[in-house]
Length: 211
Length: 192
Image: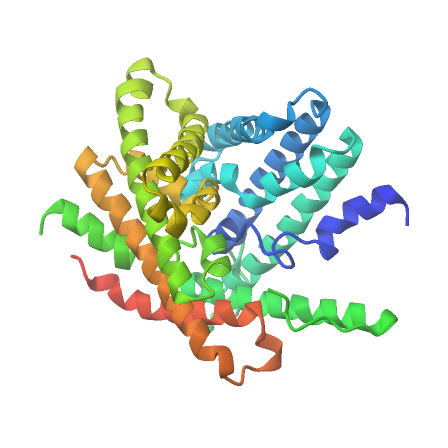
């Protein structure tokens, strides 16, 4: 596999920030009550991730080692402010539904982690691909979780009725405890898949669950 | 019931920051391996949260608002919290070494704890007065500690339990949290 593609694919599956590394969970569990929120949050997150990684990678030789963390925070906060203001102006309903979680992108560990571990050491094109891969990895987890929760908890997807009329929505899934349970089953499934994939070619089994 | 008490109870139980609002999940999952550690983390969070909400409240109402710079809120608050944590760390190291040893290791982790930042934003959006914002931050912080201690206790209880193989490791922690969250939903009618 070409090195570029492997950088891109890292975030999608192998190092998926939510399902495998389990960072940046707060927003993922809180906003997945409906698919629209899930998509909105993923777009906001991917935008901030891509722009901050590219900018930081562009200036990586100019940023002094000792004050790099505050500089990263300022750059990330600037892009988060942009997203927050744009959302407030053009998508007021979405912005209200997600509330404090848009400003909280600034302390999302995924962005800080990628910027520190990857963008500050790599070329701009690699940083861009990495950010895109991580962003999409975040997006697919968020959307699949929100599809499950909205379908079971409300009988709809994106507000369109999917389940038959007689279906009694299981309110549990859109309430906070449902978020925890869906996520538990989701990571359980992911660990199972990872174990299966790593086991078959090499015969090495994963240690129990990680942690 | 006075408003401040209502805010406190609601932040502590009804809208528990971890179990109902999913904010601050990283330390909740990562640091709750035993009860003692959770209590230490809880106190450190309480300390920083109260200080952060005091400082940011004053800064917002006396500096940002009069100058019309509300849009800088995110940028200013995160920098304030980061530098505050640093200052507290230096001060504790010098002035109270015993206290520093018991909670100093948690302090750097708190800078990127979303709970702190969320509380400071909540204080502004909800329009709390100065006293109310302190009540709110204490309530949230104690709620954070309560949730962590509950999970830590459960974790020690399940250490010898027969967990289904597909839930071993991290998934069981989220199942436990889900059950605790169900019980917390019972608090919903506590305040009229």
